[in-house]
Length: 510
Image 1: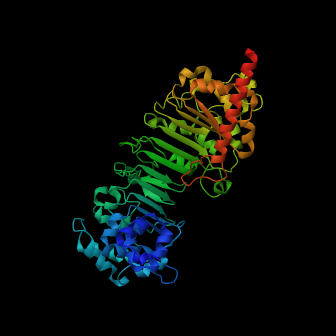
Image 2 (image 1 turned 120 degrees about the vertical axis):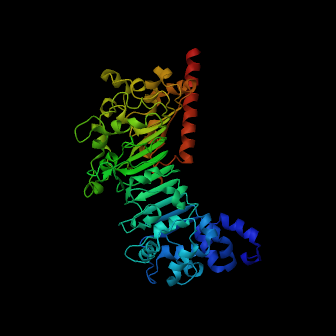
Image 3 (image 1 turned 135 degrees about the horizontal axis):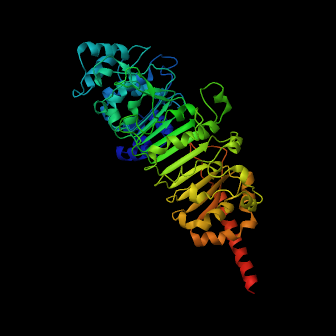
């Protein structure tokens, strides 16, 4: 029987690349040669837990990891993702004693010896202060150290419950050691781990607004407790102001509250905006009562409809500066929560979305473009008596390709009837979806009164479907896609309705 010990290194590398991380660690424990070969694969994505101290030994996980990198710089070059949070499952525990090299007391000396000479280390006095702080259990600079040692880093996720996260500040600017997230000025070219960072996730962190200006940042994930601060050098009286939770092309605000929405400053506050290339914006409104009890938050109705001064819409005012670049806009409410507040939400002011000249994908509650109380699900004809505004000519942009309506009070067929008469105003529209529950899905899909719209859909090129709102949400905040059985059900039902429609037409002709 062939065992891992008998395989050549070339085959071991191929095997290691396809194994789950947990299985790879288990195999590495049983085979020393496999552990050696699999090191590059083990260290592609590093997940480190909070708190950092090991329960029994008292050693710091980050320092053990840093010690390994000083002796194996080849591993540091292959690391592209670093995840430090209280939510990760830690699987390195059994390997630390075998993988990490050298005694703990030799850490400071080995770090200094292995740091590239091209990095400015400052004066000898600063070096000693840095090393002393690095080894201080109450105020460690380990994150700053890792950012210097990971030149290929592309993804950084960090969750902190305190501010004991410091960076050797004299490497960035002249001055004392500062918190890595609160440094008022940062020269990213001096930090190898930040030069190529493309994705940043923060939770429970106060950070400097400079993090919005990372040179290659493409996506940022933020929770409702993140706050960015802007240090104004020209206005000493305004020493700290909240600024945008921003990035260059893609931003996700999860469990967003009024506090987080108000910190979004798309204009850049007097300097080039980090939103200049924003193409995708995802705002997941927080509607959990348990948050409303202890956070400085407001209900979603206040976020959508009014400012503190009573303005018409907070979002409509905040989104103006990105109207010329935004291509995808997702405005959702946390799943499984009370959505009755949408009955009292006023639609976006006329022209709010039409100013987005490049918008292609739009997800939002139906109430924001058409009032709930004007729509009767069982009798769509009643809408004509209320004379609602025409949604395609006053709200939706002409570039729209896909529209998903959340919490609808009318089925997708009724939306087709309203949009089709002025199809010329939405020439690019390819898909209309309504987000429904499993219980209600069969009723909407089998709504026979609107069967004639299936044929109209074929001629106009607009596809329509009801998408099930699953009980669980995906990790990135988006809705999960329909399962295969649901899609097959929709296809079969559609084919059946089309067949019945052709039969009725044949009977009329006969």
